[in-house]
Image (cartoon, one colour):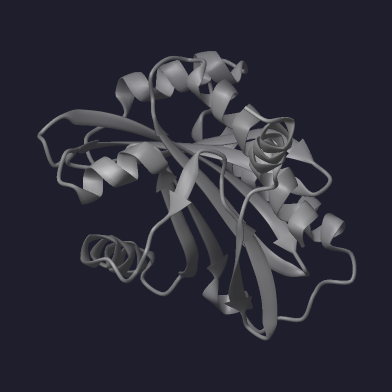
Length: 225
């Protein structure tokens, strides 16, 4: 391979994640593509149906800004080779805040939001182990089918608060699945954004791995804006 081609390949592999524009009220924000994922395409019937289903579940509380999924899974799902997407991401924003002006100091509001979520999480898991890995194992032993459990805050930074919830459900193939949703609450150009990363629960290291991955995703999002 010629040197010029090697350099071009290296630049391509190290390029920042692609971004799409999304409107939050009067503000345009850039939504970066999560590592290893591809955007769902509303021109494809299956993708459009899934997007509409998610929007219906949000029921006007939040607005779906964008949805992405593991590229290989998405290709196979579109081809009918798999029944569901296991690893995917969503950007959401509260409908009630679409037209709200940017807060003077977003970091202060974020700190308050995180404190509220932390208190809520501790209230729901009272009496459980303080270690998040052990706590998750305890909660997931008791989570019932079609039940969503909030597990609390797992990390806090000046520009993002990370929390976890888990749910059990029957997949389209009849398989009993426990899914973890790790989400970051952050401000992007003065607008409140919830950035979700979903993945099947495999072990007590699932959340640790997701958190490391999502911190990189959030860093890319904020750098693009």
